[in-house]
Image (tube, rainbow, N blue to C red; front, side):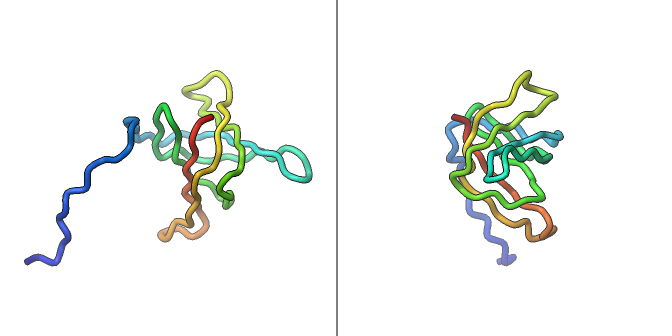
Length: 99
């Protein structure tokens, strides 16, 4: 035994994800108006996107996301999960689904 868990984990997503690192913008509304921030994509599909953010985002938050190198206009989405990146605790990994 080499101590490595070699179980085969099957992909459970319905939509194929494309791994790509591109700059992106996301925006949401808060008590002070519209907030716009920058992020970096990790992967995306027809159903959603995963990206890195310097700001933690709460699950259920409505966002508009735009990958300007791919889309002509922002896409409405909702945050499904957000977790702090352990390697770089100043970054958060965010998963959103498109509406």
